[in-house]
Length: 571
Image (tube, rainbow, N blue to C red):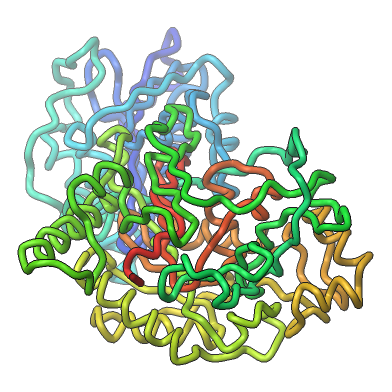
């Protein structure tokens, strides 16, 4: 760190401009930060700081750059006022108090930055990246030094020269905020390398947190609850091929490896979740037009909510109605070659829309988009048996493998999936392997995507559990904290596991479209958390075997549910 211009006998407190930046080549990956302190009146460079951080995310590096810049300013004059200028919308909005700080890695760094100067002495301003070249070059110099196994040294830095600054004074623009940015050559790796590639998106910083659980206002008439993960038999003649059929009582199953039933409370008055009888599965419902709020909240963006096999179900796209009107069709459907071509074209358009940045400010970049695929059927699926992570770990049935092939063909046409991550269980790895072979991708395994452990209920039907463990079942239907008999996993525990997994994957796959091959409970939990819905909402979702859902995550912490329970590719 250099300190030219620091004068311990200086008169009145000065005003500084701190420009800071940070980046990661891989996100998370080798990272570094850079910060520069300028004299607000003259634009003179007073101090520089840079450091290689090892493997961290972009957001962590940006916050570390902010802290270093503020500390450098305090060393020059602890009584100064400071104007921070950064091209990180996330840091600027969070430190200004307009966005909440939810991510556990960001909170302590933000608190540290807030303690450097007394409240009210620091203001924050967002600037385009092109105006933050000095700090950007310092960050890249630090990363280059780290790659060589060295520490960044101010004596070898050319960042000040590259951006047209020097130790001498110059006329400042905008009230002395900074001098001209210049267009000097990139130092070491290209400036854009801090995100791994030119124009690469910054990572979504913090997923939204769910709202406090709410008790359903009006209980519905009781009906037989469906065993989590128990997919219905072939009794329902309206069910689409490969989709979950309903049982003879008319309740749609959700295979037991599929998490909570579309709970309705049973015919004898078994209470539904949170004390009310369940509201039934979501069927044929579409929620449209909800925009993400500027405060980082989430909304269903016109995502198709068609949960019933007979309902209109579209490919992964944010506006099911408009795409249906455009003629999006399923593979193998009857009709002329013109119709087939139009359907394929619409399918590609829909997939591109899902992967688009959405309605957020352009500086936030593209979201991390998770396409959520439930595995294909297993032999336990039509029998409606609990099949979680603590049971026999069945493989796909012949029907399940056929479903996986259809999913693979559909995703190959859309062409937007860039990576595949699967639960470690056999049925998900097999499904993911079939899709990966078609797309030419590798499969990464993530333990956090596994299904809930249903304890002693594994392999049993819902009726058998009700007969053997009625009190435990009633408690499980009434509280997300209740565990299945024999030390299974509660929905609250599953939710915490899925939330932690989501955070890791959002950071690892910022700006990319990733296929997550998982089970009913985790997929429903991704959707629930994105919507900020209470735990009992798990009992109100239908999720068919080999269905697709999609959620996008943004840099401001917002999430957008773009698709739910699409099975059009199975028809």
